[in-house]
Structure formats: structure tokens, C-alpha cells
Image (cartoon, rainbow, N blue to C red; front, side, top):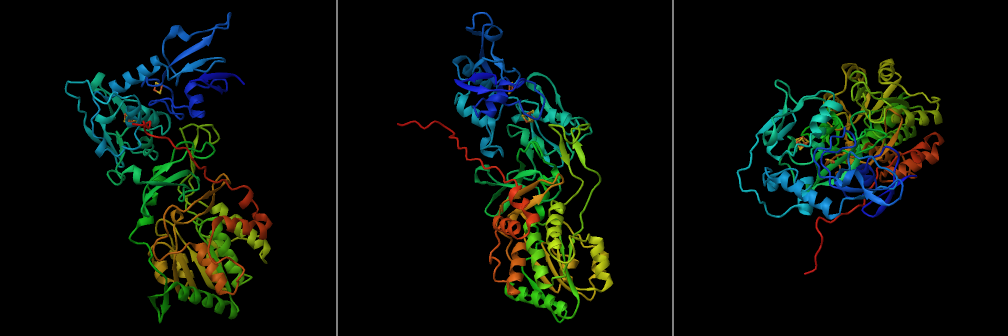
Length: 563
Ligand code: SF4
Ligand code: FES
């Protein structure tokens, strides 16, 4: 493989790769603002410039490339034998000059800026800045603008890298943003009459290397250094987008995308970015209830579990069957223990998947891209994260039982409930909004109903036993996305007070049924192993699950100097 040397390190490259791409892959620190892997190259910020040398074709001796001009590493293709310095005196002098130039009009408002702590301008000014400004004239003050329903633009912080403009032109294809004006009056703006309002708009906040584009939802909500990050998976759609949940003290503050070139590339939709609000809704169910003379009364967990179990057992003893409806919002692990619990209570239990919400067809970005293009970002029209995983697990359990792999749809479940063959049902929800249909409510008439859900609803009020459950941010598990990719996620925040993960409730039901061989406490990876060893069809839950990558990189902000 051909090689270049960057700051003394030999690096292999693929033909066509740019110097900055190779440096980034090799984690060689090269300052950069305007470059982004997902956008076109404009080489406008000039901070990545490097001294480049090439071996002479005849003598083989190193000679300055392109007459010794500093070259933008984000725009210069690698050539075999190239020697690159981004830490030579000439390159460093350029970095310092660019920083001084960028800071001329930049306000010194880091203490009140949301980006402080994760700002490239702040980081590079520590490394290349002067510490004191030589600028004596009055700074240009560009305005703050409300550019869209979720985004503010603080133009005076902008360094004109144009990442945001290129994103709206090249990825979302909506083109709301433009560069208006010239020289030091140049600023980013929305076209007259347009708002930055497209389904990917929030990505410009992540792209902005400084605090110019701000998420209204996160504005002044939390200092970033207090936030902990938990890698997770989009729990709202079948896209399986890789996300980081940023949280502190048990409260979620924001979602950010995690780069995964096999799934979401660098992006997430606003639907995923802001879809977590129901996790902290004041409509969350706060504790189990049971019906007493037709009225719901609060119950301790052991009492509620015992009532749910004995009610379902009573149904089976009366000669009727029970059913379990596993929501596609639940994980494979939840589905596994719920299916096992239902089959333990009634070996002929009817297994069904809950309603799978959809909103139109899948969308591909950039417009005109094909779903399998290297940079294509696909937004699934299916608005549930794990319909395939739930079907996979229930199908495997059903094969082991009398139904030969049959898993009913929501509509088939309603048909069965109406037929009168089923006397009791476990219903799980965990959707971000009200979901139970009138048909379901009517079909539940006269049945013993155990509901596991997160939000108050007519269905929750109807439950004979109501067991509040945990959202995906509060538990670990696995989702299977629309491509059939199994991805594991971890719990980011503690379970909402008074709630339990559905898998834990299912284990409690199993133990109430006298199955002492199941674990008392739910653990996602133990569940996957258990499932794979007891049901051979579920071995992909061990062999094919992709775990979130863990970064153990630590960098010091400043060099520690011994005094
Ligand atoms: S607003 Fe941010 S992303 Fe857009 S050009 Fe300015 S600095 Fe770059
Ligand atoms: S990152 Fe190379 S010029 Fe901006």
C-alpha cells in the first residue's frame, strides 16, 4: 500500500484519499473547521494548511511540493512518498495567524456560550491563540437570529466555515441557508421567507464547529462538561440510528448522532433528536395499580405481580387461553422474557406483535441517492424500532410451542380477542404517544387485562392490573433495524420511579409462577445468552449483535508544565 508521512508518522493510504482524511484516521491532530467527511470540500478556513514535500521523480530527493506553498490538507490528495508537516514552524505560524484572524470579531462570550467545552475555536485558541488580542478597533456585531423552529443563529460567533450551508444544499436538499454580504459583513442567513425547517435541520447544530448555531431545546439548559454520554440506538423508528444520550443526574438533555457508516452515517433526524421528551413527561405512570371493585387502587409491586399472575392463571384454569401483545417499541430481550412468561402460564399462549406505526415510505438523503450509496442516509417510514426483532423472538418461541412459528399481527390479535377464545391478555405499549385504538378497547371487554405501559391513557385506566414500564433510555437491550441489523444499547438513566423494564416484570411473573430457574434480576447480555442457549433460532442474539463502540481516548486540554 502507498504511504505518506505526517508529522513523522508513516501512514498507509488508499488512492484518492486526502491528507486530512488519512491524518484523521490515524488520529493525528490537525486543526480543521470547514472540512467534514459528509460534505463537499471547500478549503476555506485555511487552518489545516501544511508544509508538504515530495520525492523528486529523478533524484528521489525530497523537494517542496507546489513550490513550497502551504497546502490545504483537506483538499490535497495523498501521493506515495509525500512528507507532510502540520507542526513545522511555517505551518504553526499559519495556524496562529488564522486563529488571530478568526478571533478578531468573535465575541468573548465563552462563559455564556452553549458550545463552551466542546468548541473547536476555544480548543484551538488554547493551542494556537495569543492569549491577548491585538485588535483595537470596534468588533463587528452581527445579529442573533431565530432561523427555524428548533434553531437560533448567533451570527457574531460564526467563523464562516459554511458547513451549515453545504449541509442544507448537499444532504437535506432543502437549501434554506445562504451566505449573505461580503467581507467582515458576511453572515449566514436564511433565504427571505424561508425557515430552517426540514426533517434533518438539527444536524447543522452538530456541524457548527463554534456556538453559532444553537439548539433551542438545549439553550442554557446545561454546561456540556456536566453531561455524561451513553451510546444508544434510536428507540423511535426502524432506522436504528446510532445516537449518544447526553444526560446528567438522571435527566436527559439532548441526543447527538454517533457516526456509523453502515447505518446513519453522521446524521439523525429531528424526529429522533427531539423524540425523547416523553421520557420525562409528567404523564409517566408512577406505580402499579390493581382493580378493586372496579376502581384502580395503588399496589406495591409484589402485590401487583401476584394479582396479574393469579388473574392470568385463573383464565387458563377456566379453559380459556391467554395472549401477550409485545409492542415493537420493546427490545428483543423484553420480547423473550414476555413470551416465556406467557408460555409458562399458558403453554398455548397466543403471541402477537403490537401495532407498527408507519408514516409514508422510507426517505433517502441526499435526494436522488440510492439507499445503498456510500453516503446515503435512510429515514425509515416505520416508526417503531424493533418490529423485526420482536417477530424474530416470538417466532422462535412459537416454534418451540404448539403454534409452529406463528406470530399474530395486531389485527389478528383483535380478531382472536373478539372470537372469545382468549380470556386474558398482557398488553405492552411504550409508544411515545397515545396508541390504543377503539377496536382494541372494545375487544378487551370482559377480558382480564394486564397492561405494561409508560404513559397515562384510556388503556391504562382500563387495566385490571397496571404495571408501569421503562423507556429504552432506562434499560439495556437489543433492537433489530429495517436492514435486519441487531444493535445493542445500554441504559442511560435510572428507571423512572415506580416503573420497571418489561423484561423484569416478565421475570417477576415467571418467578411468581414457581420458575425458580430464571434470574431474579434482568440483565440484557445474560438474557441474550439464555435465549441463544435455550432456543437455537435465537443464536444471532449472541453471534450477530453489534455492541456500541467504546472510546477510551483521553486528551489533555493543556500541556502540564512543572513549576
Ligand atoms: S453558522 Fe456555524 S456551521 Fe454555519 S458557517 Fe457559521 S460557523 Fe460554520
Ligand atoms: S479544514 Fe482545510 S481549509 Fe478548512
